[in-house]
Image (cartoon, rainbow, N blue to C red; front, side):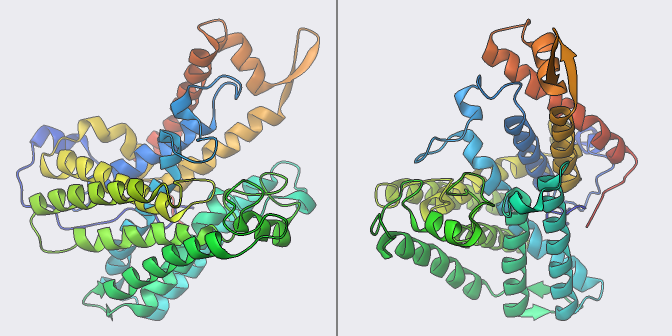
Length: 405
């Protein structure tokens, strides 16, 4: 079940490693880009944390999505994940080519993985009642599948080299497609009129993406009239993956570790600034996955990865990242477990004071609510839920079991 964010390898930086820090990362191989695993694990932990509060009525603002335009820390999590997919892609493809995969084999690999991720996503949507007539078609895993499929096949098709010696994506083609997707999405959302709303309307119901989703998937959306992971907004989400591809190829270059670190910081800061500068013209919006959202969050991801890279791969400080490595090396399995467990706790009902309530609600009300204020109690529940999901992943990690698609 582990997806396109599978562990990547890269030549270790030519810097000294602290023996104690390196040992703390075991069983991770020395050839792994440990910072990427840590960053991936941080993202998965964040996903689980924000998805599973004790009660949705009491949440601290950083753990909520922005109501519409703008962003919160929670809005960074999903684009970070897609960015990591892109970073891992070129490294994974290069490793497979060295093992003898051809261009056709890489394409089959992309298709099969995408189908597996989609199947897992649809299963989680359907469980436990399996009402196919009202199931949500899109969502987190379906979007990952669609973006990985589209970006992966494109990168393979236009690669300058894909043989036993190496894999090299066509960076000009990747950059060109990114620009087309971002500018094209802005043009569609700005100039194509929506019946009853006109052109350039970016309200929840009046934007072009929502209109198309209603036309195609009415009755199968997250909200009655729109979906934050709809079809049209998946186009700029593909650009998020491609931005990771560019960064992944930069990390595979022969530059020194210090130059890679400084390059990521500079590029990330510039992208964040550009996204903010363009915000008044096309607002940063996670639900619409606007072009400015892609630019800003991709830049933010570069900065965070740069800091992880400096700490874990340059300085060799890895003990702090070990809890995240547990999630990062079994990312899709961790997300699947958390979603499945949450659904089980919601559908299982118990008696409480003569009334039936979900096991989730019962545990929150009896174990956490008495401990603190509602928002703090809700956060404590979420933290405990993350810890519960971490334990089986830690057991897999200790036994070097990495579940892959």
